[in-house]
Image 1 (cartoon, rainbow, N blue to C red):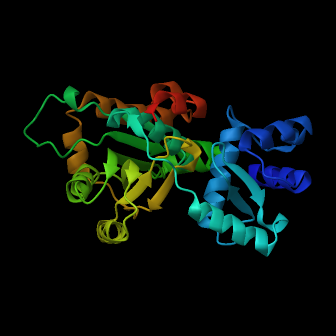
Image 2 (cartoon, rainbow, N blue to C red):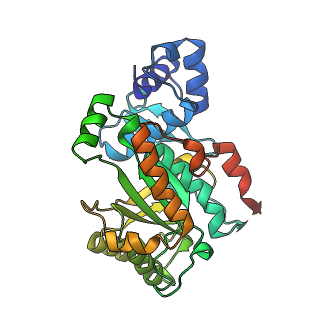
Image 3 (tube, helix red, strand yellow):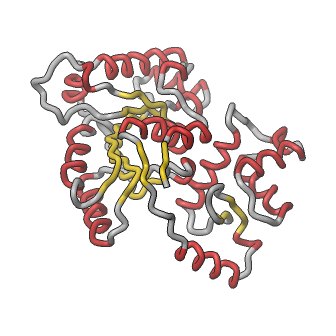
Length: 307
């Protein structure tokens, strides 16, 4: 049984909206967890990630989001057309009260590491710009975070060995530039900083906790994303599992080795590449060597709020 099948089975039987924690608790009580092919250390987070991705990527997803704080899910088949219409109208009418929040860009790093791990299957590494020992290459070369997807956890050992034998291991390298907010005031500078800082990677993303919903702004953001292949991720500081890719990145088949060589001026990036090589060679990912993955509750408590 897959995580999606488990979630669907529980929702079908309970016939009411449930949070991912409730879905997992009920599944364990009914011993459905014993039928899973794998569980991992945080199965409830895996359930959330897979449901969110299914809703995002499939027009015919059986799942539907209900409410917030905590976010719950139900099955579309359990709702009448009238219920669906009322739900859509209710979600359009709900406006989150504007609150002052106290956080810095670096406070968003754990949120992005969480999202990258569960939604992109990537391990991240924070790059401290101040640790670079050379300045002549300019400011716009260091990404805030880098990430790597390893096939080790998805592929059979024989496939990995074959890939190593022919020198073709299908890892995917990510580059992330983080901003607190994205508006017309900082769009162009933030976007082209991301373009410059991510040219070396397979996929580059501009990440922010607050993304303007102005229609003209979103149209311009979409145009830039399409033109330069840079993706956009919105971090939800209230519900980390609701973070989402606003616009997907356009994957690059090849890496920019000249820029990678320049980035070696930074010890964090150098250690990141060294770690990847070791993990690929050993077919074992040393998770503690990358950015720590906080729990959802830990993330929510990190941000100070004032009403």
